Amino acid sequence: MDVEVNALALNVTIPAHLRWTDVRRGEEFTLQTLTVRLLPEGTPAAKAYGRPTAGGRGAYVSFPVPDRPELTELVQAAAARAAELWAAAGR
Image (cartoon, rainbow, N blue to C red):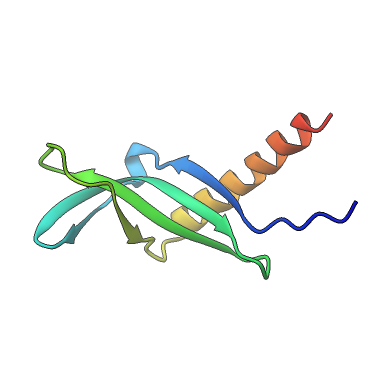
């Protein structure tokens, strides 16, 4: 069967020691999760998501992921773990 998969994505919790803050529209956010997508050409793309540092009912806003080796390693480890889980589910 010829199956076309358009997208693959996974959500990853950013460990507390790797979290960072960023500002959008004058409000500071603490980045807590990554969404990693596998693009059609086979490369990963990640966005970070967070909530307002001050708390409250602020929106869940996306931010670019900084180019830091430890975050690249987190994305790679998450992709490897996701592959293991998919492989195990197919047995």
